[in-house]
Image 1 (cartoon, helix red, strand yellow):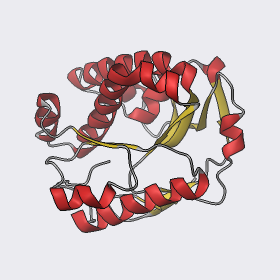
Image 2: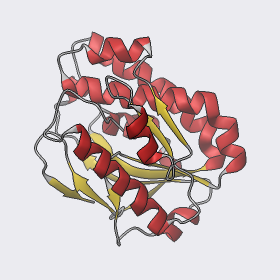
Image 3: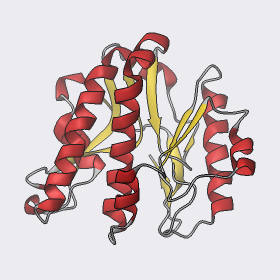
Length: 227
C-alpha cells in the first residue's frame, strides 16, 4: 500500500477508498481472512484515516519513518522508488514475523493496494497448492537483457500466494531480491519485483495460473487492469 504519495493521478482520499474496496473484496471471498497492510507512503496516515481501516484490518504497518524508506523516497525515478519500497517492506515484515505467520495461518496472500479480488478468483486453487506458490505468469520481459542483468521473464505480482510453511523460504528470497535490486541499480541497470520473483523463486515450487482473479487501475494513468 501507499496512501500518501507524490505520484499518480489518484488523490489520498481516492487511494483510501480504493484500499477499503481491496479489503472488502478480500472478506467477500475469504471471510475468515486476516489483513495486514504494509504502507510505503512518504508520511503516516493520520488518526482519522487510520480509524477508517480499524474494523477491517489487524495491523497497519507504516514505514514512512524508516531511514531506508526516507532515502528511497528521494530517488527521482518513481519506478525504482515503488519497487524498492515494496521489496523492502515485504522483506522486513517477513523477517520479523515469519514464525508467527507460519504457525498461525494456512496460506499467505500478497495483494497490491487499491486492487480488488474479482469473481474469477479461485480460492481452492490456492488452498490446494500444498507446499507451493501460486502466481500468474511467467511472461516475456519488456526490457533488454542487459538492463535486467539477463532476466528475460517475469511473474505478475499484483496477487499471489504461498503455503505458510514456505514463509521462511519466501523471507530469504526477499532478502536476496532486495540485495539484487540495489546491485542492479548501482550498476546502472534496472530490475523490478516481477522479474526478481521469476529470478529468485524456485520454479519447482511454482503452481502457475492463467487467470489470478484481480482487477483495478494503475496509478500513473488510471488504466484498467484485469488478470
